[in-house]
Image (cartoon, rainbow, N blue to C red; front, side, top):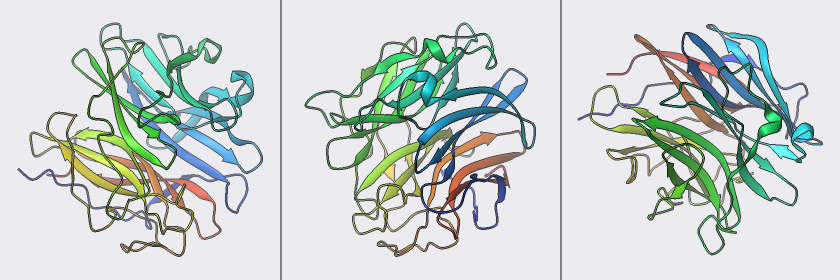
Length: 308
């Protein structure tokens, strides 16, 4: 069994989208790559220091970013910020399901779901309602946000960031309909530790092409890191059951931006976070939000041969 991750240098990756302004706090990324039937989409979050996460845009995608087919704003949802979206297909009806983490103010994050729709273009953001809230007394008592969701058979697996008042850790909830969720008994499923002893959250989960396992890519940062709340890099764990995880990168991140190295305690931003993977027959497209020299974050794509 190998479970080999793709070899990627995000310093050489292609820029797909750049923020409207330079400097810290100007971000475009938090990508969600999504295929629905024969159509492909790329959802991204846009942020600036004043408006925070003010908009999520879903673009048509055909080997590049196409026209915007759906826009969701924080204003129309009546919230102060939106973060990473998650799109999934209902395993029985084929409908599109859109999940959005939103802050109602004062770091009051919940995860909302829009009503099922036959297409991405017909999703109605005004139907969004909470499906996951912080659990008092739990390891996610403070915050729930940044879901990444997959279905296996008829079961949904939502990996999300849950905060306990100290920092975020990776949590899991499951569902049979995408509406009612049950938290995993062993949360957090991936704890803070090693170089990521501050933040740890799952960014995406994909089947390993060469082993009976899943590759679990996660975002992490260390207590000593500059900008540890958002200066996250990408590591990888593996799992055979989507419940129990083994960290394969205890000595340092797997992917980082050009300014980063593999040491704990970065003095400059090395951000490479919110990884998502679009698997095709012969290759993989990897999308990530990556730090630029001016302090802003942009969306980049790397295409690699299908790992074996």
